Length: 266
Image (cartoon, rainbow, N blue to C red; front, top):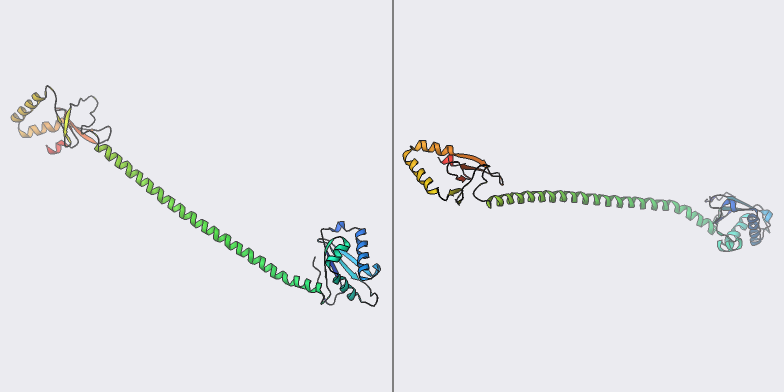
């Protein structure tokens, strides 16, 4: 509770007592306070009026009548001049002495406190605003950093996927390049052994190879070119390799196989 200083009000001395509640201010404490103050300023207790207010306990001391040629204002000023430390020792409590007496040290101090209150409030408000701005800036910085990291992360993941597809394509090409020139033979077809010349397998059967070659040569000599081309084209059939999926052509008459379409040549 902060007493209000007013030059027209009666002189009052305020004892701001800490560590006490209004419930703990009993009759003994009230009587003892009056006795101590009366002894210190030389005034009978009957001329002293003390009221107590709740919250942080404030005892308001009022001198109701002059004493020994001194006015109540003079007596109140003498009580204030005794000081907080001595009064605390005399009463056995922690207190701070202030008053509404103009031009007294306590009144100036109290006025100064009241004048400083708006400044303190302003400082607190400015501090809150600055803290808010710092928090907002930190949040924005973190948010931008997080967004940038997410973008970089997505870009890196896309590059990794692209590289994975590229590597898989290279692996397939390497596997295709390393596969035997003789494609996988369809079920039920026996592919004769041979050696590879380009994309075509030259058949080299053991016993019947010479006879087949002779017969083939003979047939070529006796058959017109157009009929011979049709027969050769009919002998080739297209199949697909099991490992690579590539199409290849197999000659049912000679057992020859090739990656290139031989009917285009015929």
